Image (cartoon, rainbow, N blue to C red):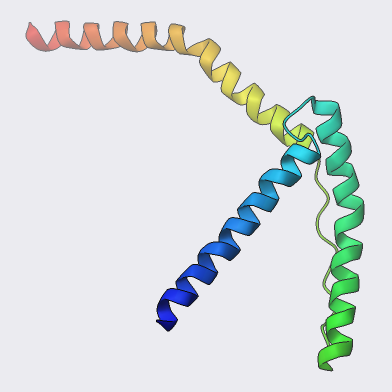
Length: 116
C-alpha cells in the first residue's frame, strides 16, 4: 500500500512541476516573438540570482548551516551563441551539395582506377 502511495505522490509532484512549466511558458509568451522572449530572459537574469541568494540566506537562518559564498556565474550572451550555431549549420548546409558532388566524383575516379 505504501509503495503505491509514494508512486502516486511522485507522479503528482512531477505532473505539477511539468504543468507549472507549461503554464509559465504560455503565460510569459516564451514561444512567441523573440523580443518578448528576450525581455523575459533578461528579467529572469536579474531576478533569479537575488531570489536564490535570499532563499539560501533563509535556509541558513533556519538550519544554522553556513553556506560558502559561490563565485559569480560566467557571463555569456545566448543570442550570440545561438546565432553562431545557426550560422555554422547553415554554412554546412550551403556547402553540402558541392561537397557531395566532389566526394562522388572522387569515389567514381577511385572505382575506375580499381577496376582497370
